[in-house]
Image (cartoon, rainbow, N blue to C red):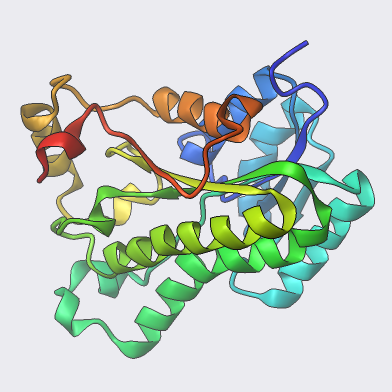
Length: 257
């Protein structure tokens, strides 16, 4: 019997085998969890995700743009048909227009700001709304943040503001869902890892070089470490933990930017 045996949940935001969501999902699968996955519309994105999820026997792999309420409703309707109740949601969804990441922050356009905030932050609220009546008591919701939510990180720009809003959303959701459904809500703030998302951040290689000079462990983190932290926060091992932002960054947050 694994730590997650008999547990069922939803993983949002797997793009490829470098996605932090996939590392978390891999650890959940090893411990016995069943999972439903979304992918962005399009055959190319579906192939990428199915290449990972078919070998683990995922029963639900469906298109769902987290910026579209109708698609979120349809997706969670299919999950409800299959599982009735769920024990967790892993939310690893973020997006910003390339110009909003490459230009200076003060040049951010209104529409780019709204889109980035909608997909990177509000999508967590939307997912919880659609899953609300499916949550088992004690269920867990986990999302992903980054140090740019609390400190200036060159090149992170509007995404830093979105992550700050996301971290605040974690606290407010934890109060509401904990009171109403005993659902826990937490976030992992991971150090820099090479992912599809990080490729859009200007100067990311310099960030990777800088981290080991400041972190107490004198190294960057590994994606597997995010996966293990995710397993802890999703599982019953963290049954008394909610409303928290957990740093998995080799201790970099201790000394700051």
